[in-house]
Length: 373
Image (tube, rainbow, N blue to C red; front, side, top):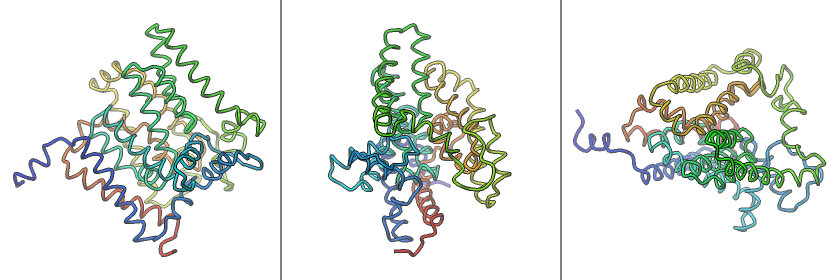
């Protein structure tokens, strides 16, 4: 039987301040775990695609693109270079600061849009998100900019929504669906002047982005072509690679058959695939449909983004990286599942600590650097 204090903890809604406190606790847990297992901050440099981002950021700082092999969109490196120059810190520190600060902002934005419970499940359940937020990755910046655009449009600030959405595209290209949603809603409402403001903003950001690529690399669409002409996703591994996009679920199924994985990896991947599919099913509920009618641009973004995620067809990554690819859609998934999510704040506190520790254990284990100074 619960005592009075326990009942109060369970019933009282999670406030924004407490949510952001949980974020800080999760961050502290991540790095306490890291130092206990690894005793080095070099994890930031070697995690995920960070080395590639740092090479591009260094090229931007020196404005020297000779012999540079760019295989990712450059919005994240531009931000790293800017923070490094403004704060006089090394690019590695700037990368970590951008990722952590962006994750903090993204968590707050999700709380503003969908409530603190949804924000907590978004921030503290997905290992890939926790690793990108606290070790370093481009996803937090993309989500912060993208959801900043969505919230700005809710407040009828079209130029700001278009600007933030356009910047998000320079970080992760699929964030373009946030702009598509804004544009379609403006056209449907016959707000043509604002549509052209949004279109002009997006084009201006796009031109500024591709101009250095055209001048110094000879290909304005270098970062677009990097996803296709070099068979991006193959990773130099022998075996079938697939294509950038195909039929929904083909890459997940064919990739699982072509590239066997440990049962634990399969269990985690298919748990998230199943969770997202259940969330998609709940998006047909009356509650979610009412939300979608009120915020049609967000529903368009969510639908197109999930379709692209399930249609991603590079076989080696389609299943194994699904939990990372799905990150920008997870607030919508958890909002659809909200009636079924436990609201007990003790569960959310536990998630913020346990998930952060396990996420860092996963990073250290995957990199096989336990005990390496």
